[in-house]
Length: 442
Image 1 (cartoon, rainbow, N blue to C red):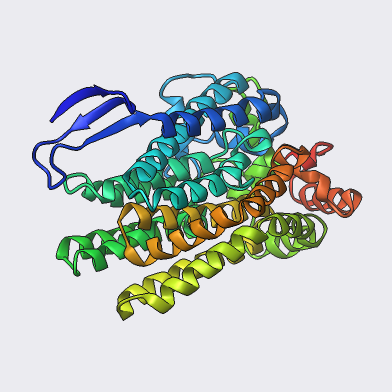
Image 2: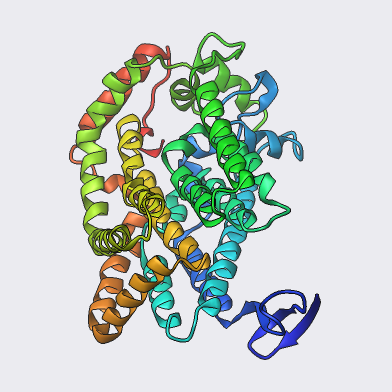
């Protein structure tokens, strides 16, 4: 295998030992550069270091380490602690910057490869799907602004890396390990991006005609995810502090900002179902529900497209196993429901549902699944004939992307005073002496 320069790409690989003899495939070409530059433009337009100052929920999670045992959400903080004894908001911004650049590089390379791999009659349709992905305010854009450096970034990086390894014979056994890493970042992976990885792993069982290796990969991955989720969710932690305030004071000694006691309380002290009935559900109607209505409204075009895609694939699937896989794809957004019940960050949960749908479609295109390609071409032909409609969809979705919504989601609260009262009462009853004038920035 040799590395070559090629006018259609900056770097190319020429293989003499594969069925695709003597074909050149650019590693970085025009599609990749265009996609990367667009995502970079969004970053500069929507993100600044000031967003981290107010997002105490995010910065506090970077302070958690395995100092007191194998606890939830502490993997990222533990890795960071290997390189510094004192955490700063600027350092978190730099880490977030590097992570985001890694993510958009992944996305650019994978999407560019999928576009170039497509046949001449398939390429316009794939490009249209890529445009719909890039134009969606809930694809990668939600990781900018207020949510920059969010732990969700690592979920997506790990998922895309695992999907890449899933196609590599030698590295495929790394997939269960990456599943363990994803859940260790936070157990919420189970109800966010897990379907984007689990369904392709199941699909590989179908693709390899139920090979023992693919079954073993699927079984071990499911076992790892479920076991770690149960452990982090229900196993008692040995944090040597009686309350969240003491824990927050301890963590704050090694940073240039204060740890947020209420976040630590919810993550490590709050008893179930106390926090659900007294905090999450009362706030849902005032904050999460209006936000969810806005996000779902701007997602209507994508909901229609994905709904029709899976309906067609289910009807045209050549056997029951493949039909079942497509049914799972159509049902993947159901993961939003438990996430929405147990947390008010509906923008994050619905973004995960949207990203999962795109990941599944692109993975099937990457795998050369004929059923999905047939309908992708139908959608591509439709939008080629109705280009004005495609333009209107892009304008419609981006009117949300480049508004205050991208960085100030709290503007959708029906009654901020009610939310403030609920939060203050709940935390002041349980964390003595903690007053929270900045509750909306959690």
